[in-house]
Image 1: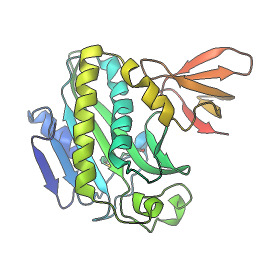
Image 2 (image 1 turned 135 degrees about the vertical axis):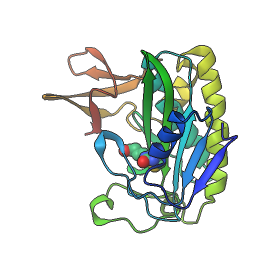
Image 3 (image 1 turned 45 degrees about the vertical axis):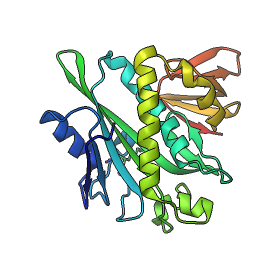
Length: 246
Ligand code: BTN
């Protein structure tokens, strides 16, 4: 992973650039980084604010040989790799807000957008896009209460190159292990330790209804386990619902 790294001064979106490269036959492991994005994309069709020079905007191309239904699990792997990459001994520990946001003190420092390309019913490629707020200290009004950066939390600048290198190393080793096992079992403990929702009340927003329960870890395929007040155990898939703390 990262044997070919392209660093751009500006991109519309690194996910879009990698998607185009994938269509042109680029090899698995290609990484595209941009200093800024003019059309940064987030989950659920939202925009990802991408100012110049302060943060990490990066997308990795994968060409997995496993079934399409396993692709969402890569997002959870990427969240673990990102948590390992940003962690600095003696500093605050990042937490994961299921399925794949990294937060510190409840504010977001990292988002991940995984997208998949299909050909004839099988996975042609998966792209994993990661945005990490590194040295940004001013946030637009509309996200000020929800977003933070490593510099704001640690009280000092961080080296983006080191974080990128650590992420690629960690993600590669987690991905190789996952490709062998086809399950998240080997990172379940680590993921649950980092999970900000663990043991806490969450509100599950499904199309047309919402309900509350207590988060109780993840399954080996990445669903969030939520125990309803009635005692019923539910497994929540990220594609269908969103979860927020209550
Ligand atoms: C989220 O909504 O939390 C996901 C945000 C993902 C942002 C990253 S930045 C690099 C890559 N390029 C994009 O356009 N989006 C992802």
